[in-house]
Length: 112
Image (tube, rainbow, N blue to C red; front, side, top):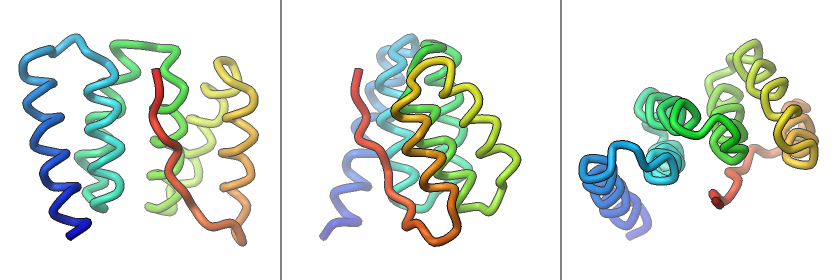
C-alpha cells in the first residue's frame, strides 16, 4: 500500500515538473519520493535539478546527503554537508549527526 502511494506521488510530481520545469520544489519532492522508493539514481537527478533551480534549497541538499550516505558515498555526502552549512546550520548539524555510523538515516521533510 505504501509503495503504491509513493508510485502515485512520483507520477504526480513527474507531471508537475513537466508542466513547470522551473519549479524547484516539484523536483525536490520528486527526489524525496524517489529516495523513499530507493530509486537513488533518479532521486539524485531530481534533487540536483532542484538545487540548480534554487541554490538555497536546504532540504534538497539534506536529502542528497542522506542518499549519498545510503549509497556509502561519504565524500559526496560530505560535499552536501559543506554546501548545507552555508545555507542552514541547523539542518547541517542534523546531516552531520546522520553521518555518524550508528545513526539511523531518515529523510528530512521537504519544505519551501
